[in-house]
Amino acid sequence: MIKAVTEGRSGTAMMPFKGMLKPREIEAVVDFVRQEFMARKAENTRYHTPENGWPNHERYKAAYPFARGKIPLDTPWEALTPEQRTGKQLFMSSCVTCHEGSRTQGGKDPAVWDPRALSYPRNGYSHRQPPAKPVDSVSGASVYAKHDVAPKLAGLSPQERQGEALFQQNCAFCHAADGTGRNWIGSFLQPHPRDLTSRAAMAGMTRARLKQVIRDGLPGATMPAWKSVLTGEQIDAVTAYVARAFSLE
Image 1 (spheres, rainbow, N blue to C red):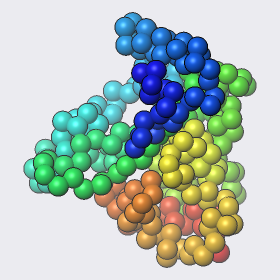
Image 2: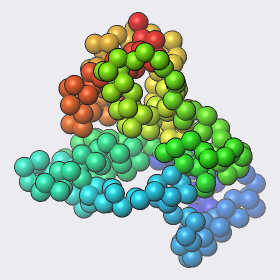
Image 3: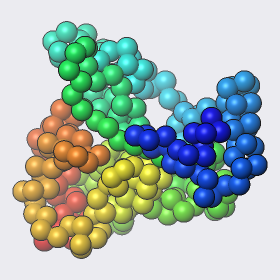
Image 4: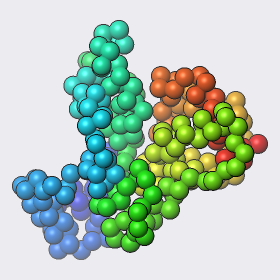
């Protein structure tokens, strides 16, 4: 573990810390991880807790078999039970960003989804709702929280309003509520989600191209295909909202 923290691990998201931490500090980190996470399995090291923004995590129960790799993602749709189909849809819409799952039943291993989340929110930070009180830089992940505030737009059409709700419920998990991609998960995905507020990043983007990317995903990026999660009408609504909210010409 000391070697991994010191030198990193090739082919993974584990970076080397030898230029940032002293050898004694690296030893201290390893000792803490081994004691707190591995030996004690301390309550505050669990990720899916209300304090980390996951109230009632059991509502994702149907997706657990896919997150844990018990049901491969490429299992034929007709071979899944109704509950498993619901679980797969839930996994693909809410869990796949961090949980890659088991991609295949055997043999060929297609790259369904391969994000690299490099960090997690500090305890006390919730990506689900604005903080109830001002956050501090240590426990509140304030560097990310400011990007989880959605833009306030007046005069939205019914379609754009529907798209706003869908964007904030789904797309904001990676792109941030304000579209910058600078929330905690977006900041640490490689490659980073597109900054929808950047003229340079959105240069040449048309409504037709945007709709196609939302529908089919973007190969080589962390942008998944939403055609199995959202209906055509919903994809149109998200497209309309993004175009309105982020001034897409």
